[in-house]
Length: 157
Image (cartoon, rainbow, N blue to C red; front, top):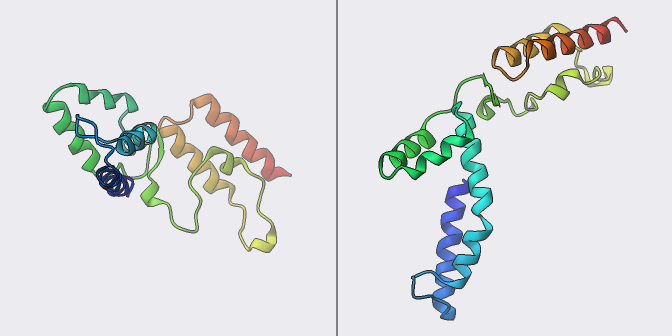
């Protein structure tokens, strides 16, 4: 969706440049150039997020410096389905159910929900999620042990 809206706004900026006569000799206009600078960092952030979805480091963005082959590879990666479940960058955003918040460590350690919510606090489920984070490389063994102990201590209270 980001790319779609980016293309729409770029076309609109180009049309406005034509209307107001703000074209440079390079073919780009003032409004389009300002818009391109404004979305440069958000565009990089979206690409890094997409790379994380498929289990790649954000540094793979620099593969674009390789002419043709790098561009083709990068396009293929951007069009690839994300990794199912967890990877070392977090959960797959497509797999989160609408009523379920994204899996975050602070959410796993939060205090039990009120009984009025009708939701039982399930320590075993929380420990399983922590184990998934550890297996995905998000948590170290020491962090896992500390968070697990914190959950167990809360259960005793």
